[in-house]
Image (cartoon, rainbow, N blue to C red; front, top):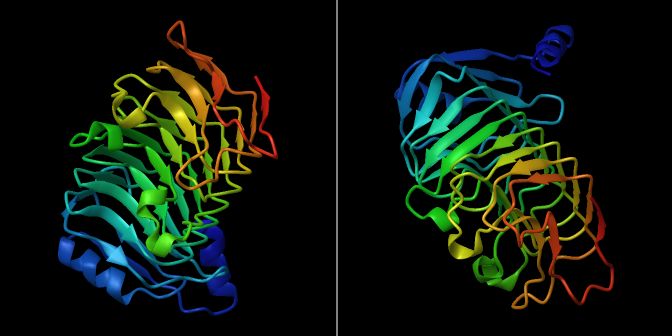
Length: 290
């Protein structure tokens, strides 16, 4: 993807630049001055600050923030707060903050080959109508250090109690693909909230060792969204179940018309189920094939 963008910049004479940063100040400056098509290259090292951007790329000129796993965004309130569209976040590490990577109103972004760990709450959160994003080939572990039951690996949408003006958080069509989540994720590996729809959760590997069981965190995936495809995932070790499907009574929605197929579960307790469908009043039922 990155090579293709660089070639495109050269062919059509687009002014794309690479911004090399090695200090907190340089990274803050780069995030405020970046333009569509640019690349911010992180040198190895630890970056201590709150990093955010509201500058968007475009479909043909995304903005890239990249570095090795030795480039670490550390501490801060949010490790990285993305409030923009068409970004590629690739290769680096986020560690030590209250929350890992937060996407608010952020669309058409790619998060790839990242490591997120030692986070006080959740690792990566798509919320406030963040849609059409892809999280892939990343490693998320050791979350919920301060509030274990709220230390989800990946969190999609918002609970009804957190909806703004009682409007659903339509964080839709997000894809979570080929990631390793766990161990020591205090909450669910993936928590899909009521109001969200139409995403894909595929080819992920879950290690539930260290799951807290607090705040109803007793499965790798908690599904309150609708029209999700959850396919070819595998997990080991859980407090109770592999995948749970719920309707959210307070919202009056959720947990219907999902397609859950070919997921593999190991290390469940005697009463655990690989897929536990607890939604009882769906007009469009879930399709489950183990």
